[in-house]
Image 1 (spheres, helix red, strand yellow):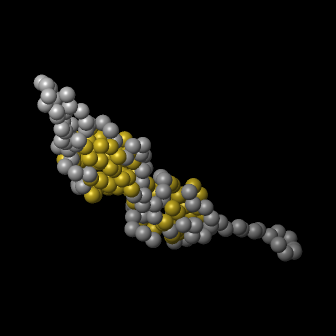
Image 2 (tube, helix red, strand yellow; image 1 turned 60 degrees about the vertical axis):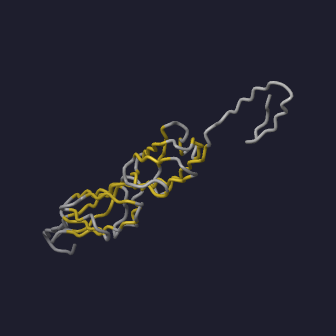
Image 3 (cartoon, helix red, strand yellow; image 1 turned 30 degrees about the vertical axis):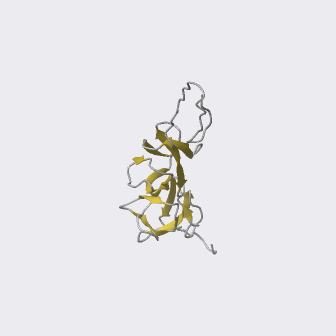
Length: 200
């Protein structure tokens, strides 16, 4: 017979011989990169990629591979790049050569403001104008400054919740859902009534 793993073989024809040639489809690697400020995972159909864990898998040339992105809690899927494109969580790549797809996940969290008493709170970045708009969802964990504005005749009493202090709060990093509470107070008046002689 014939043996070997090279494409050509020499056969000595001094008797009848039977040679069997076996062909296998070639494979190339598909790799996935997960990036961005948020967390997430990518899986494939056919199975093989489960990124986070396995981010590269060989597939036969000619295979159509579907990739699915799943954002972790507190994140959103922002889109594909590289050999994959689009903003849908599902994308398909035809395997013709080694390829790499990048899935981007963005951290997303909501800042909520609550008010006790009479006043408003505004933010240095767009989004919070409480009285009217008291929560805002932000991407990529920005640092937000809040300013307390007492109503006429009221005083600012302080912050609580994710903010603290009696002046403008420390910067609030919106990397998870957070609530800041602003308390406004009415000024108090002390009346003293004097009877008899002497001072108070």
